[in-house]
Each structure stands twice: as C-alpha cells, then as structure tokens.
Image 1 (tube, rainbow, N blue to C red):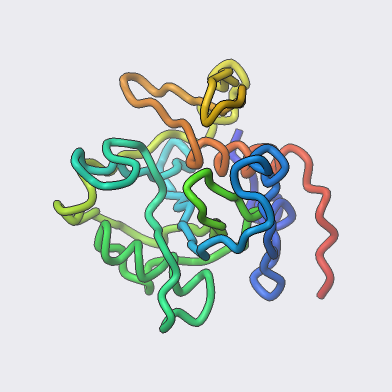
Image 2: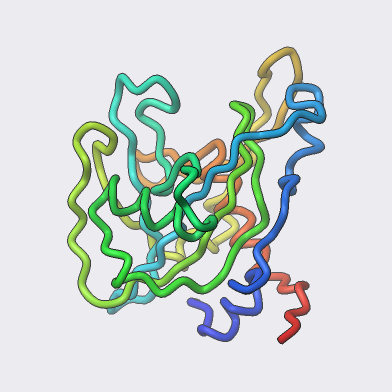
Length: 207
C-alpha cells in the first residue's frame, strides 16, 4: 500500500530542518573514512504518481564512467559552490542528468545523510514529480531511466542483505533485484532508509 502524503511527511526530516552529517551508516565505514571531512553531495529520490500508485524513479549510469559505471542510482552528485543547499544540488543534477525541470518537483523532505566508501556525504531529498514527465537522459552520464512501484519495494520479500568483503573487512550491503536490474550500494542503502522511516516515523517534527 502506498503511504498518504501525511505519512510521507512524518517519515522525513522537514525541509526547514535538513539532517546533518555524519551519515546513519558512518560507524560501518569508520575503518575507511576515519574522522575526515567528506565531500558534500545530494541526490533526488523522485516519486512518480501513476494510476497503480507511487513509483520510485531510478537511473542506470553509462558504462565507462570513472565512478559507479553501470550502476543503478538516483539522480544527483557533488555539491557545487553556487548551490544554495542540498535541495539545489539535487535539482540541478536532476536537470543535468535526466532533464527534470525544477518546476515539476514538489520537494517533501529529507532522509538521513548517507556516507559512501568513496568519500561522499550524501543528503537525499525525497520529492514528488508533479504532472507528466518524460525523461531526457544525458547520454554522457545516463544509460537508462526506469521506475519501480513503491509497493513492490516495500515488500520485505524483495529486500536482501548480502555479506561482502571490501577493503579488508566483511561488510553488509542492501540489495533489491527488480527483474534484471540490481539496486545495491549507496542507492539501496538510501532506499532502505526511506522504507524504514516510512514504517517507523520516529522523527518528531517541530513547527
């Protein structure tokens, strides 16, 4: 079942009170990241309204990129000096990557920050896409844009935690396999945070 707008808002950090680093997963990467300052980045977690309910929009990066080639991701990237905040970064990157006009985006709130093994502190922005949207992927960055029903993602049978060895340590990563597409890594971790917060909206929002 899809959440109501009120349920979504209760699950998120409000727009006037964005989360602060470190990421909720920082302890898992303490051996790699230490106490160093991470590079600020932001992603958009876009929710599309369809006849069958809400769906989550993802991109698949082109092969041959220096980082995360071929991986499923949310539109987003490193914060520029000219970006006013995390929302501005997410909107700018979404426009550059998939042609999403900021006027078609209704920002709802933030998820917890997420730290990556590559040294980024990512602030995820959850937003609803208003009206019809036809993606225009930037061929230099995005190979594919696709959607996954939110109800499908909320089914616990579709979530897996896999044990891997990386940088000399055993680590645990979240995975969602939708047909032939594998959602894993930072994207799956951010998605898991959204789904967990929807089930347990423990944040008390002050006016």
